[in-house]
Length: 154
Image (spheres, rainbow, N blue to C red):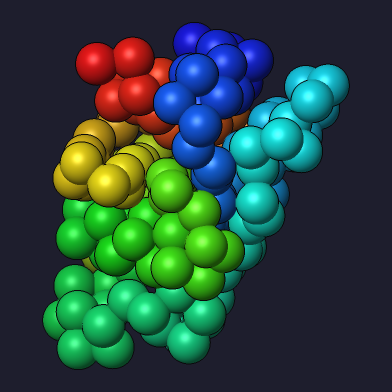
């Protein structure tokens, strides 16, 4: 799905969006705001690349980060929830993962989690991406937008 599809689904519901990104480093937000009219629904984003910023800026529990590391489905869920709160948005979209080339916290490159948090609940998806850093990051963007579209269209 495209960013345009996600924005149209949000607009149809009268909802706004906040984005929390780690491995994608702002690519999801950039893809969304490249669409004319995105300002009607996109509230903002947080790039929390460092693990401690996931706690400080997005409210991910410090004990969760200490126990499991930053690349975890529950971390992605908390990031999506946290960005909803921090941006005052109806929907939070989050990415976390290992772009590579080296493992992180014992997790292999290519492991990605994307999450969407809405007033109706949260959805998290695991993605096993392949390729170099750029390919893993691109796959993460596509997975995040795809999950958002599925949740909003469903």
